[in-house]
Image (cartoon, rainbow, N blue to C red; front, side):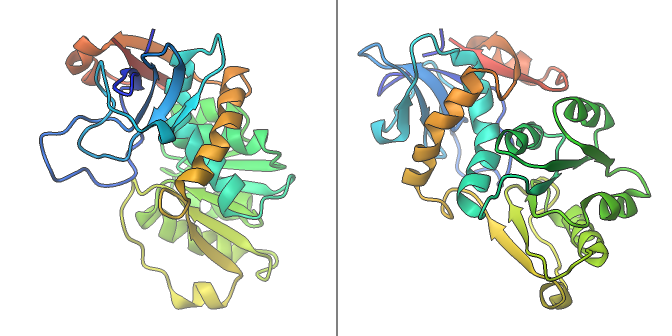
Length: 286
């Protein structure tokens, strides 16, 4: 069983979706969250804000204020695997935009762990249509099976035109890429927009394709584009924690699906270097 104390025996995903640059101070213990059992026997999900003393360990020091109790019988492995990637889109849609059921969503970077779950989260929260865009065609096919209404392969020469056609009138973009792909996507979507006065909330969540973009000033003047960031800092800890029980419930009852495999923490070095299986999250257990 994955487990914390305050110290805590912990179970954590072997890889978190990388959305920021790596820490510059070493040594460090990686990991930002996990599921564990406290000394009093309570099973909890927890997150840390210390970039040096992380959760990829048999025991982790945690802040009780950054934990939520899990229900009896909770699948600790599923929750450890899904919470971190699913949280990014769940909190973004619930806390960073004026979300309306029936709204249409573009997930830019839908073939990563967090992006793939964003498709499920958007559908679960009532999206009328979800367009998924990403480079990995194998994973893109899996995303289509998990709820995307349209998929766009960003490795194709015709991607910009296809993206413009599919996402011209979306209400929200969940962007896990940034960098050059976002520059092209903004131009394609805004140029094709049927009504440029219609609000478009572009939510920047990750930057796996680059930390910066060049944005023409005309993009902000010629369309109702609202650039919004979503992450710790733009959303307070209390707001995050308030959303987590509902997310735990959705993962626990299967409304957000995740495929997992487990590996022993002692084997992390060999597991880390193994090829990733598309759509499968690896969780380390003591």
